[in-house]
Length: 80
Figure 1: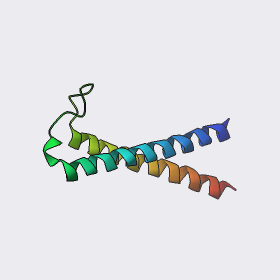
Figure 2: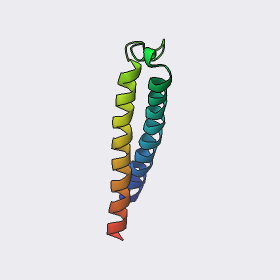
Figure 3: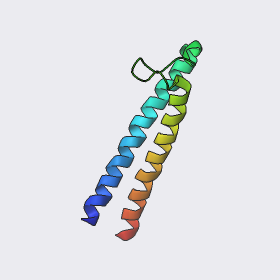
Figure 4: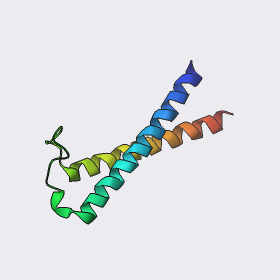
């Protein structure tokens, strides 16, 4: 059960890192190509979150995901 939980934590960390990084890259590209869009809403579904806020949140999610992924990997190596 503990090994299964560690695997889930590792996979969730990888997922958060990958998609957080991709979303951050999207936000950075929008800032470079169309800086006038930064104050607009992200989409019509979530108009209350701006593009620049989305970019910052994506970076934080990617950092947390990377930290989780690396810690789960290091813990696995030290236990063997």
